[in-house]
Each structure stands twice: as C-alpha cells, then as structure tokens.
Image (tube, rainbow, N blue to C red; front, side):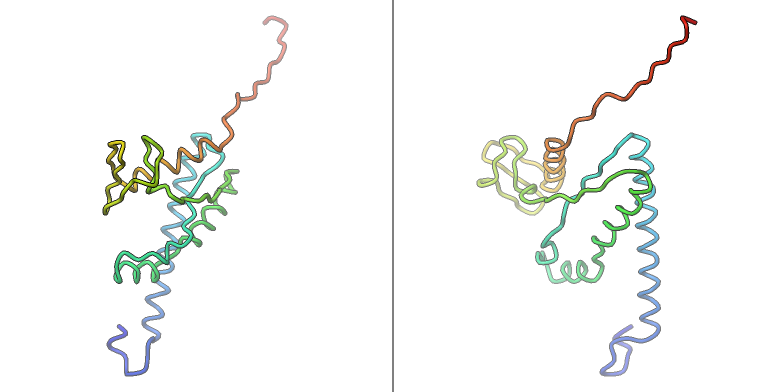
Length: 164
C-alpha cells in the first residue's frame, strides 16, 4: 500500500486502518491463547508459570527479512502483560526468568563451552546431538524446577462424626 502513495507520504487512512485491524486481531488471538492456556493450567493445579525473558532478542538477526518481521510484529511484552493480567484472575503467578545459555547447554553433560550449534542442531563432545530449541526448552524447564519450591501435601480437614 505504501508503494501506491504519492512521493514523500508513508501512510494513509487506509494503511492506518489495516494496522488497527491487525492489532485487534493480534490482541484477540493473544487473549484467547492466554485464556485457553490458563484454563488448562488452573485445572491441573498449577500456581506458577515460568516464561523465558527475551532480553536482547531484537538485537540478534538471522537475516534482514527475519529481523524486519521481528521488529514489525514484536509483541512479547504486550503478551506477557496480558498473560500476567489473565493469570491474576486465576490466582496463578507469572515469573519471567533468564534463558541465557539454554540453547548452548548440553542436557547430558551440562557443558556449554565446547558445544556447537549449527542451524537447529546442538552437538556436544560427549556425543549428544539434538534439536537446539527443544533442548533449550527442556534446559529452561529443568532450571525452573530446580529453583521452584516442591509441592507440599494437600491440606486435609478431619471432622469427628461420633463413629457414624
């Protein structure tokens, strides 16, 4: 649409309307995703959700096209705020934790200095080879489990019923 504008113009009412429409659709999709996710987690008794902090992700570019898409459609903070707001309704807390080194850490030996990542594959000198992003997700989860408080016994209330 911008290519059809007169020289020197970068926007029009039509373009702004398209952006507003896209924003409403994104917001609706995020709200529906948060509701569905938190409904499921609430039913399972989850009380804390850990999500990876994506600090400096926008500074990393795999290609010009990917970087442009990331910058144009970035809404992680907005999604996180929506998730936190919706989670409060369910009594679930949301904690943002660092993802540092999760995609380079070998799940088998725990090493990071000699692992290598080529495209989607993570390899380690110990012989491990796996999908880097899946391995990073598992490593992130393991870190949170190690730091999280273990679940306690469910509270129980006993009443005396005169042996009836």
